[in-house]
Length: 276
Image (cartoon, rainbow, N blue to C red; front, side, top):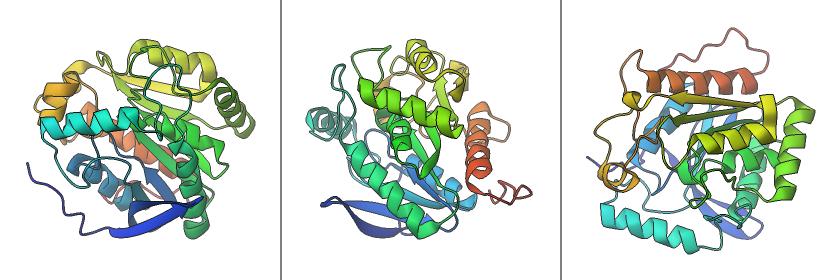
């Protein structure tokens, strides 16, 4: 497996409320913020980012943890997880409430909308950042949240990474603006279980469109971090995706791109998710 030099993205420093982070940007059109999955912006995350770019969007990938562009070793990945779990930016365990980093991400969405225009911004969360895409909907610019296999809180299979006030605010915002949350998981995922999807459904009702793929659809040979530490079908559109026409994971990717297009490309119903 080869690391990704990320040479076809521009590397930008973005400051929100005095906090500076690196963001990788590519493409044109309405903005989509693609969050990295644990343990970082891997080549598989960047493959998804390029698909979003090629579907007609300006994709923004913020660096939140890990080594950008790398396939980490098992030990490196374990250390990234350890640091994230004790970081003040994240709330990895039950009772912690909403992760503070989502405030920064909402500011990023606001900036990308101002720069890219269009009716709003898409947000795609993955794994450790899965629920962050939903919390980002507290920013009015975010109108297309995609929650992929959200794994937080790590110690409560039926918990949501939201404090009570934010949960109510997200629910009310989705209801008021008629928004839908698209979500994916594998049936046997022990990090994102049926109990967690049930909790989202209980909070959001019909605004939660949770889709479940069979474990048999997962890539059987993911990178070592996922094979040895994650140890279960998990990453629907990245590490466990199978890039074959008609494959369930590739259909999930196409559904996500179609969802983004329907929400973000106003006035162009004839446009196709097709530059792939």
